Length: 242
Image 1: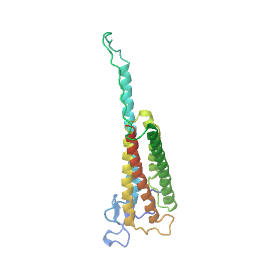
Image 2: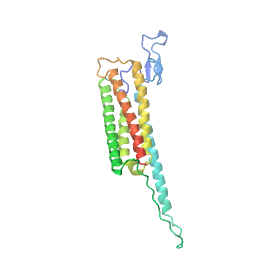
Image 3: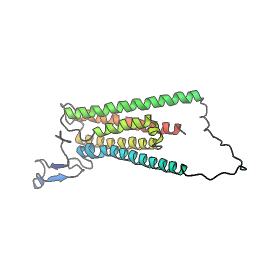
Image 4: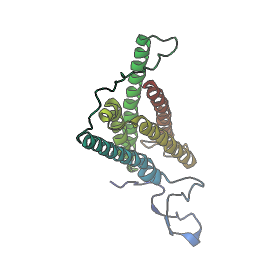
């Protein structure tokens, strides 16, 4: 299957015959649309821009995991070196552990219950987003428009859920909350750009097909809202650890 089959514009497209004859059938290359001013092509969005969020997210995970493993290895190497003897006359000071004060007007039981509620909502929204992305991919495929590289978004969603559930793969990625937050914000932005492109294409476009433009705009708008809520929950759950 082609990445962007039967779409008005791809990476290399030709001007339609109702355009200026002087540029008739002139190849056009690039992400900017020549049919709709000040917007990107749907092919570029589905094949490059939206999957780019996943690629950067996965690359950051690999880099941070490698850095953390290097730090752990260096710490273990230092601990294996012989340590200098401490004087028997020196007085050891007991470690004092400071705990964060509980939130005002909240008992520990209430805080635990609220945390579980937010976490449950977080994973339910992730599941809903996976289903929404799958729905968009299936409907694009049934309409024979090509699915680009949109399945990479499913990889990002599943990976983010696994990283969060494992608390940053058991501490190997301490800043996983920040990475997830950046992922949700980036996906919300690029899908917002996609809505702008589809509105320029025309809300009444592809009427009578299995996936009218009106339906696609609705689906993508729902995903933008879910990404925004996920970002808010990410901030709330990150602050909870403090």
